[in-house]
Amino acid sequence: MNDIKDFINLRKTLHRYPELSKKEFDTSKRISAFIQQFDPDEEIPVAGTGKMFVFEGEEPGETIVFRCELDALPIQEQSPKMAHRSSIDGVAHLCGHDGHMAIIAYLGKLISENRPKKGKAVLLFQPAEESELGAKDVVESPEFHKLSPDFMFALHNIPGEPKHKILVKNGSFAAASCGITIKLRGRTSHAAEPEKGNPPYPAAHQIIEDVQQLTQSKKEFRDHVISTLIYIRMGEISFGVSPSDLEMGITLRAYQGTDLELLCEKVESIITKYAGEYGLEFSYDYGEIYPATVNNSDCADMVRKVAHSNNYELEEMNHPNNWSEDFAYFTATNKCVQFGYGSGENTPNLHDPEYDFPDDIIEPAANIFYHIYEQKLL
Image (tube, rainbow, N blue to C red):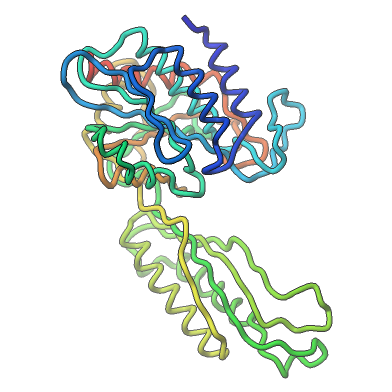
């Protein structure tokens, strides 16, 4: 029906025209037009730009969802020689979501050639994974509730690992994380008389140092924790003024959800301590809150069974990935697994400005999902 080149061309087109979270309007249209050639029984819009394509068997049975992501990143690509490089300044598919979409599209082709005898197979193209918690919107939608999936499956390509290696883990697969925005306010003064004001930077410096020490020592936590300073904004471009206001953002991560809760409590105490010592007004709030992605062991076993039956290289992960995934919102309410799929030892890292998804893993990765589909619905 379709040659693999059609799916590679789809991937490259998606790469050339990336869209940010909740703005994936053209991406969604392209996916709809492409998947419709496989004659799904139903196309269901979800969570704004998201799409669910349903292939339904004649007999009752389980509902299985295979998920990928629509959105790109707000990063400038640095691959000028690439013919399919991003045409949008400051936006690029540098995490592989273009490839993930091509994988699920190829799965659609395979399912259309051997349609389910029972139950439902659902291809979910989810919006806003990178920054807007699109999975949460899907989980809370009436469309998703009506589907009521029995199982959900997703993969993420893993640069640095040999191509086609499957990485699987029971329990926590990806870290819990959140962003904390901290605001400090002191008092301005003339830059010639900084002692007459109360600049916020000394307190901010102490907060950053203590938070880094807290996560580096790890003494008070059950498992791995990380803090990353993301940005600092302070003052205006006015060389005569010592500033009064500072805002900074820190990302907090933990392999265990309880550790992230404890880490947040301790960071809040640090902020309160130094704001008080330096006589500053302060506030903090949280955003981009990702629970830990916790795999269901039965679903993970389905992936293991496919790997063993088809002689795929399989690795049992010793610890979760440091990055976070909003697939966590699915794992919190459904039986799910997300697994890693090696995308090449020499592939640039995720979110690197020179990253580009390797097209030669599209078909074999789709076959993993198809073998799971075969186990359950044929």
